[in-house]
Amino acid sequence: MAGARDVKRRIKSVENTRQITRTMELVATSKLKRATDRVSSARPYAEALADTVKSLYAPELAERYPLLRQPERSRRAAVLLLTANRGLAGGFNTNLIKEARRVLQELRSQGIETELHVVGRKGIAFFRFRREPMETMRTDVGDNPTPEDAESIVSPLRRKFEEGGLDAVYLISSQFRSAMSAPPGSRRILPVPVPEQTTPADGFILSPSGPVILERLLAPFVRNQVFTALVENMAAEQGARRTAMKNATDNAGDILEILTRSYNRARQGQITQEIAEIVGGAAALE
Picture (cartoon, rainbow, N blue to C red):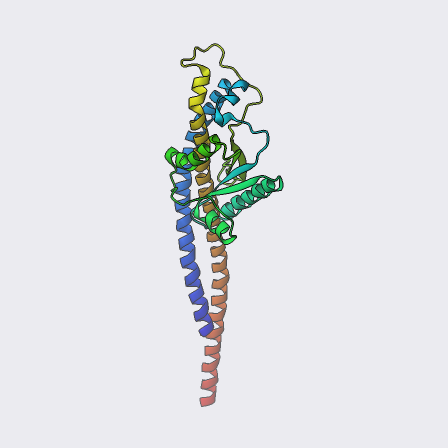
């Protein structure tokens, strides 16, 4: 009966695991709904802010405002990587780290000196294990990132760029499309991207003037890009975790079916053996 008991213990262990993964799936589903709502709320503001900056931009302003400065040649760039503090989210963190390594390698191959800034325990743990120097390491951004979180992350980089210590800042984060699709992506957030075609705000009376408004919007525009990325990253993380936990729950169910059949066969074999022993004992007494 030892074999059946071992299988029974495995069945109990898998059942407990399935209960845990099922609970985590439900929690991730609940958090995903809230995170998706935040993404839907953040995007219209981000798009409106980008349109406003685009309409106020003029080529001659690039010399006046440091955040619009377009270096002729980049000598030093910062890479800002957003990852999660927790795992059990499939390939979410791995894909972001892979994208960050790709960007770092591409910049270094061009002779650009790089510095790495990481948000999230998973990214920090990976690069620390690889002994990759990190300028900043942040683990204090929770499940509900705020504009203040974004400001505290990007303000040192923005200030360093304004002072000329950096020529570019690249942001690595997930591009949330749906719960099932959130590929990692990279984009340059500093200098502020210059529109190829401007759309002047004709027909509007601006007070103060357009350039003054633009100057006041540049810093919030950069901060909002990081905030939007944090919000989308959280939604992508919860979507990946829900998918991973659902797959784990389904796999546990499949394993339980196999173990149950094995247990039934072992039990049936034990019963058959016991009956044979009884019959044999009775025959010996006759």
